[in-house]
Image (cartoon, rainbow over all chains, first blue to last red; front, side):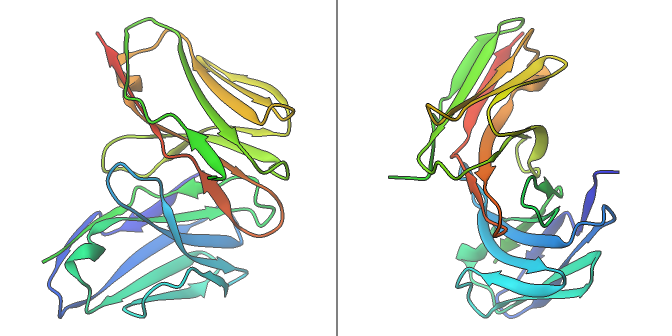
Length: 112
Length: 111
């Protein structure tokens, strides 16, 4: 099983809303990632959790708040987003050896 | 200079053609090399993964790594319309949880 599951697949939210994106993997990977991808651009790293601890925060605005409840789950809490935050949000996981990365199908987020 | 360079295309080929996709990189520390296929508005799918130099074949796909030239390639044989997608190269080196992506090449296979 090489699957990373993300929910929801699509999300539309207003600038005052609070919502959460969820991600789950059962491959035993100890590194989990959030990426943001705009159209026709490569994925852009936001956060990395290694062994359930936040190891990388790429200077992401505080309106994005990650959480890793356990080794299989990763959440991204969203609050007071801006229209320019509209993008495809990708969760990924991989072995801590850094040799490969498996992506979920993504959440297409629109901020109105 | 970017860490990873990839020709964005677009590339358009007839069905059945052999497709060659390429990336160059500048960091000689990279050891792991990946190719992803991404359909519109979907997450990237890991197609091929190689360690260090050499070739790897999986069905119609062949990945090549030339570390001396800092050059990697993905070949697709007998291309199909279903291969129409954006192909991303990626690379990494231990440790650090950092992956470096090319900008992606858009491929269209015409029936």
